[in-house]
Length: 445
Image (tube, rainbow, N blue to C red; front, side):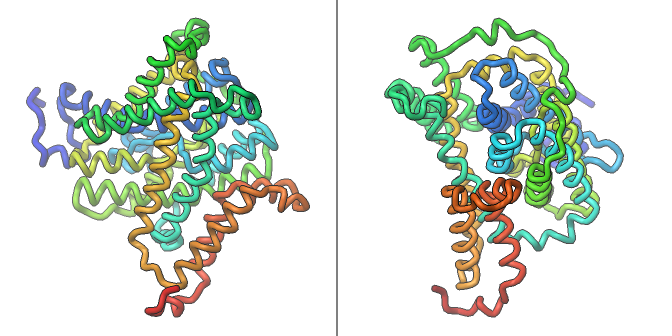
């Protein structure tokens, strides 16, 4: 292979091997596109579990989110037997599971959560044997509804963080101008780079916003570097660090979310082959991609990592650049693995003031809602489809807002039904399957 850059046509081949001078910047671009979204769920779940910012446990969760996002990415790009689509699919920690994981952590603990992640991951991988047959369960109406519900369920978390964090709720410091100043700095810097910069600077807009907020926090005395000094330069993952418990609510929640995540990955694989190569995904690619999704989640759960899924923003990046080389994304995966083995990287992230993270989270969760609305824009708004949206959102988000309405139910059912997301997904899927298409007449409500 010569050192000259490959042509655009050559880079549309998944097996193309560009020179390192071309592959490394392209790989880093993929990492920048997903970096903040990847570690944010670990922080949210860690805080829900009672870990303090800068604590060794929070640093570990962040470290595992990077390490196993990288390993799951390698499962997809390099492959292992039938595992892996062998396409440029970037894996990362999934936002979708957060509304389900938070109540599990608060009611049953981390051991139950990671038991559910391992079993749910294995179930997720099993779906690869017949994934093509259940694609019709989730048309744009259902997937769009689920994505909107994820964003709406998480937006309050962003506001809480921007105002100073959950521990300060009810105290005079909560909502202080110092917190909001940092959060708004992140928001405006991220928007500025997103819309007025190009290339990698635009791709990494949220990350740059977080860095700007972090730098502003230092002279304000709101950044704590003690965790960075304590953290080691190298550490390997610790199996079952938080225990392993078989909990019915956790297992059911993770398995049900595995179905949603599997269909999302099928959509991402199809998007990559259509946008990057101008063809439909093969059954082998869909099955292999689902196997990798589930196996990556199960392995991560053993070591304290959270569920992984394909990252849609990276699918958009491939469609934008037209670069299908899986070696490029493999380099991104290797970079994440290296970051995951260096606790000081996780410690640096965990030393960030929570208000800074809040600014980034507001942007990210708002974009999740926007992505769901964009998916719903393809739906024909007949009476039938409007009823499905109305009933699913009203009941799902209503139960999350008033959990005491289910106080007489068994604990397992209460955890699942007050997650917000699972009732929305379940109702949308069931109603879409059973309501007759005859309601799709010309008249709309």
